[in-house]
Length: 193
Image (tube, rainbow, N blue to C red; front, top):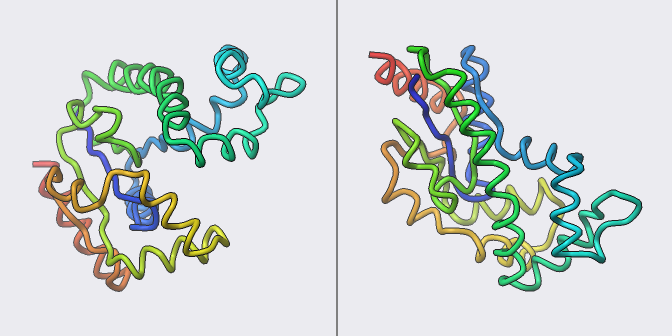
């Protein structure tokens, strides 16, 4: 198996690249999807309740209440990430084990690739990039948030500049989608050799 990560900061086009890869017929594992499913797992809910007791109501995590706590306190955010990441690593190890004998390409759509240390599992790292103003405009429109809220979210993430330094490939997602798609096909063709 060859494992290819698609990563990038919020609003940089990571999800757009992942959907293009899916259109080409490749398997893309959506790590954000893994996180969303975690919130329905009883053992995960118990872990959250032991660290954030006020956010669990009737056996369910009130994600809005949790978000309000962690986005206003970086130490609590790191604590939450420390609870989530071991569960995600178990999922990743299952994927690697399942496809270990395959010669196929598999993709991870993963925002916190470097923060979780998953770059060591990847044969290639693609970073989606776009200029700051486009990034900010995309997120404000998509999430219906203010510029101040965008800056709060963006400031707690590893900068895209730092991700680019660690990347094997950088794709500018500020260009027309047909050009991005053509570049992506060329990159994937090179990986299949």
